[in-house]
Length: 438
Image (cartoon, rainbow, N blue to C red; front, side):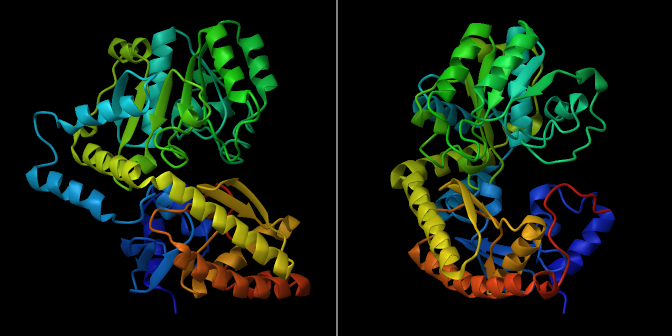
């Protein structure tokens, strides 16, 4: 019998292009025709579907937006106070100023702050400020930085430009063709590729945009070399800390490597599930925001700053990044031990706080991953090929996870050996990239 979530998902796909607002939450990315898709409640590391069934989330915890766990009491308390007194008014919320002071205290190199509410729009703001400051157009980048024209324009020059940074096969339809050649990719830890971009752009580079940690940690001297190139060319160095920020340490992960950008961008984990984003930077760079037009009504609402203040203060009080790293490492180690025990091929990567793994079985890889998700769901655990730990996850939850993985790996091994992986699936194989749904 089909769950209520799947029934609603099928209705949604008739009304909403793509079914929902975020590719990473599409049911087809996890378990087509079976994934519950919608939640009725979320608390700590648990989530309830529309049928009232309770699941342990050992996957992506709201796409990495809830490092404290779902519906954290302290953050919710701060938000409720704001809601009760009024979240929007003609005047500004004083929390904006307190949050700016806190962010610049954590990052002494930064002197000014602007706010938004989502990661993608905050990166668009950062790129606009960089172009306004330098008076130049071209941007060099590596990694994923959102959906905006400035970024997707990569594929105007090369249809495969984003294949190693976002998804394969993305069409830049709707992106102005005049942006052709305005954004150029280089791969992480490949300083030679950035040097080639510098050679060919000849003084036209406005910014270098990258994640300090991109699925792997920087090689020796990599970030410092990027910083040196930015200094030499006059380009603005922007660190995208939207996903990794506040997970490896309090503040941006770049603090661990003692490399100072000109701007840094935060969202997701800084406010534990409530929409909030911040662009911080050096004063002379940030002031360029006054020379262009960047303004929006809902960037002034009160819930986001209140949630961010409560989240960051709790992270500081309890050293949350230390816990995330501990749980993440334990999860990776346990997965590796169980894979070896059952003879399952697993490739583990990422960082402890944003880990990912794959089942390298060639053309069957996606089917094997889908079988893993299907069998884990049967055991009331959300599991795919990523695990983003939260402060709410404990050893008890790891034990529950490992017990289920032990059982599921035994099933997977038998299916792989028999060649019956796809026959064991109750629905289609999960998608691995962008595919039209309607």
